[in-house]
Image 1 (cartoon, rainbow, N blue to C red):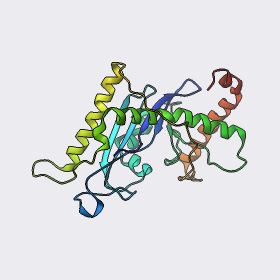
Image 2 (cartoon, one colour; image 1 turned 60 degrees about the vertical axis):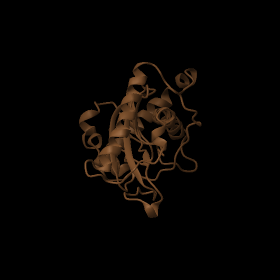
Image 3 (tube, rainbow, N blue to C red; image 1 turned 180 degrees about the vertical axis):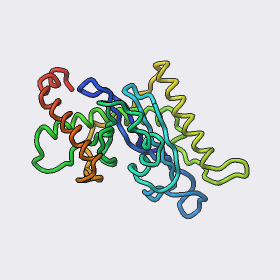
Image 4 (tube, one colour; image 1 turned 30 degrees about the horizontal axis):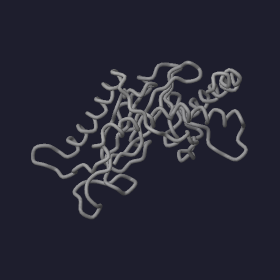
Amino acid sequence: MTETGGITEAASPTGRTTSDAQTPHQKEGPPIHEFEGWHCRKSFPAIHAQLVVNHDCRVRSIDIRPGSANDKSVFNYSDFGKRIHLIIPPRKHVIADAGYMLTPQMITQFPISEGMPADEALFNYLHSRTRITVERAIGMIKNRFRILELPLNQKESLHEPATSRMAQVIKCCFILHNVFISLKDNVEPDLPDPQIEPDPVSDQQGNAQVTHGQNVRESIQYYLSENRTYLHFMKI
């Protein structure tokens, strides 16, 4: 079974390109005490698949790996994570959920607290509205490719490692998903309203990247606050 995760690009209220980061897991194999394979950090056999998806749910990048790791660790080890400062142009951003680190290229929501300023609450709401694109993409993929909902065999063979075999199956699903997007043959999932998530990765004060990211986030927050009337008119 596949859980949600990945990175998604979407159009921000500023008209600039943004992206959204999460990590899905592909559940694998027989019961925990009887299988040959590995566990994820949630204690079931799994493979991580981290996606980059644009505004129309097209997968732009994918990183697939087994093991026990949180979203931040998977991102840091991925090719996209290592090269994000080279890939994302100036004044463009990845929109990431609360499991990721705030940087100039990757914008997370403001930490949630009682009595938080209205401008920060507005930012968090629009952040979630933008980030739901990745949920749509993963929902479309899971609805169309039901093999991702089935246990995959983790047992090694003499000719091919199980990791390679499963990665090929998962990657093929995402490639075919892009083909269907190009053909405008979409399967829209039923999704709940966007939710503001808790903040498991706190902003690290003193880190130069985080400080720069905070400045970028505050400038976007200011823009959204100043254009509140326009956003209301556009029903954003």
